[in-house]
Length: 474
Ligand code: B12
Ligand code: SF4
Image 1 (tube, helix red, strand yellow):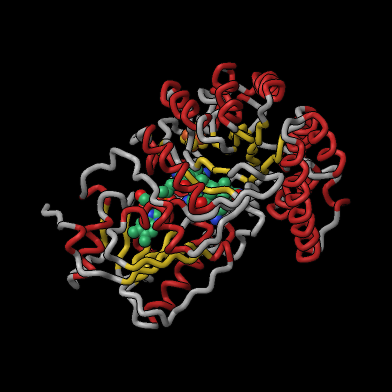
Image 2 (tube, rainbow, N blue to C red; image 1 turned 60 degrees about the vertical axis):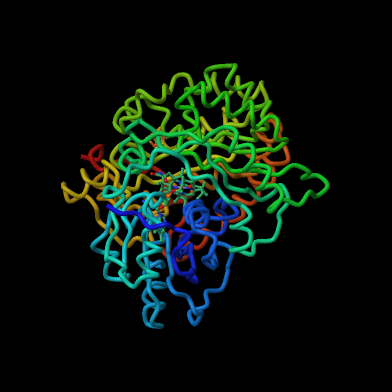
């Protein structure tokens, strides 16, 4: 294949869009920009004029803009909205390119709404695509597999993104995305990563990382009294796969005088040196996919070799003593978890004072091993992508009435944000202000969601008492 000289391409006017699904609420810990669009912006040669809009920040979309092309990203939860935006732009005569995780696993569905779809990572094909737009030879589909494999991390150009997104500078209460690695070689059945970036695990050049942090600070951070340090969200799928690289990155971040949050497997935190390095480097909290407190359930999800449930309590306590918060993510599955199991989990969260817990109903996202298994067995009941926010049950549920199961999970979610829970964990956890402020935001939002659910489905708490799984009823 011949590759064009990117800088010789005719200048284009490009719009990049991050859509917001109707059920993707504003309480999600959204970073300042969507990393996919950050990567595309950073790859775009300088002669092109770039605009970025993000619906998560309520940016207006100008359908009458004189764009040569419109690129839209999409995760499953955002797919329906992405298609709406794409259709509207095409009605306005614009050339639309759809890409991202959902599109990559649903190319036929997406193709109906676009002039061109991109399957897989765009790092090595984006400049060819731009050249093809400029020369009126855009193809209907670009597949990452037809280009050289993506072997390195695209460094983020914060100056370009600041200019294109017109985001104003923020204090340390909003996060700036950055990444050190991509991919995770594990194979958890509910996760998209193994089939997308998984095996192609790669890390950032350390020197470039430091330079990017400094640039990000310059363009996006404004110190404000109590929040005098910028907060970065490390969007790595699982930073820590390679301990040497992790330590190297943490030593560098320590020199940058920042705070940050990160996704990491809990078992990596068994190592006190790693924990100390995280704390010293400014880590506020680690989001760990604990998923379940039962090893058999972890094994069911093929996560048994990544997590050891019996170690959770000690690791969490050791981290707390070292000054590190652990944010736990938990999954609920009507075929595995009974209402008693859910109650037990709520008690576990309370006893272990888990920071900002996240509850999710198991969701077979396209691209996961679970999706294929459920789809082939006819177990998916709903493919309305708007509902793929992990608080809807979209799979068959034989043991529990689907709505009742959803109600149980949502009520339990609200319970772990009761004042009793919040005050108990704020009291013992490090970085008390973040514990309190984030918990109050979650509480407000989840309580409203529960009330709306009760109203819509005419349900009340009494309906949750004494419910047994169907098989136990005989
Ligand atoms: C960081 C992260 C978050 C962050 C930030 C999200 C954000 N808005 O930026 C937070 C914590 C907020 C978050 C929240 C959620 N997340 Co999340 N998150 C991730 C994670 C770990 C990394 C994403 C990332 O930044 N990747 C780096 C970028 C560069 O990669 P990329 O998006 O794939 O982009 C490349 C290609 O796809 C392509 N591309 C993408 N868009 C476009 C567009 C065009 C035009 C083109 C040409 C190419 C192209 O090129 C890009 C460069 O190569 C992924 C794991 C993963 N494997 O992706 C999960 C993941 C994306 N999250 C997931 C989920 C389910 C959620 C939540 C629903 C969880 C919840 N219940 O709250 C919410 C939804 C919020 C939302 N609207 O996105 C799922 C999504 C599954 C799916 N199919 O949609 C993933 C895949 C994890 C999983 N379970 O497998 N998440
Ligand atoms: S360890 Fe985390 S990122 Fe890796 S496959 Fe499992 S869930 Fe996905």
